[in-house]
Amino acid sequence: MNVNFRSLYILIGIALSACSEPDSGLQLDRYDGLGDQLRLTDHEGQPFELSQKKGKVLLLFFGFTHCPDICPVTLSRLGQVAGQVGGEQQSVEIVFVSVDPKRDTPERLHGYLGEFAYVATGLTGSPEQIAEVARNWAVGYEQAENGRDVDHTSWTYVIDREGTVRFLFNSEHTIAEMAELVEKLL
Image 1 (cartoon, rainbow, N blue to C red):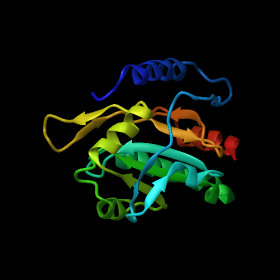
Image 2 (cartoon, helix red, strand yellow):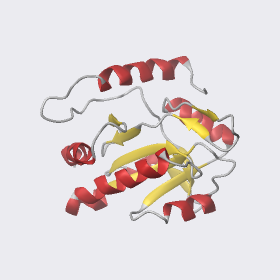
Image 3 (tube, rainbow, N blue to C red):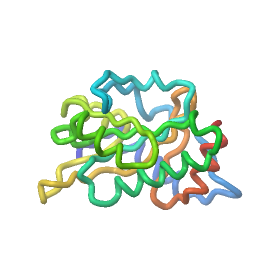
Image 4 (cartoon, rainbow, N blue to C red):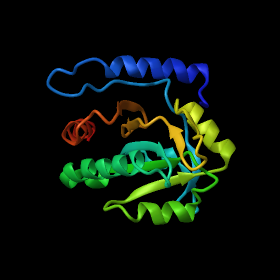
């Protein structure tokens, strides 16, 4: 996998914090060493910088459009989370970063994301850009042996209005838990 030692250290910390049992709800934290400015191309073919979304709560997920299961399920769940926050929905945005830049062009991302019942921003770039972003966000990924799939980490990064990662969702978190935590940030 394409993970450096900084990323490995961060992932170990994330895994340990995910093992702790929350009391009455999920607890926000600060992952100051995780992430960096993200500069890629959006699904409309326009330059994108994460700082453009300052003032909004972001749900950032890495995946690929040819994914048979985890990615579409995760994106559907994130759409349900955004729907549960009610009137604050305009303050929550979903950002999907492709780890398959050779196949996931802006046009492909546009069509793929249009199949879901919510608005999301799809991002892609050159293989070198995606590798750099993945390193900065502690995302591991590699082409699967079958040549069609991309094995990748599947955290959803919850980013507050100031641009700080505050929580990492995994498939164990319920939609209700995720919506509750997002509401805390609103």
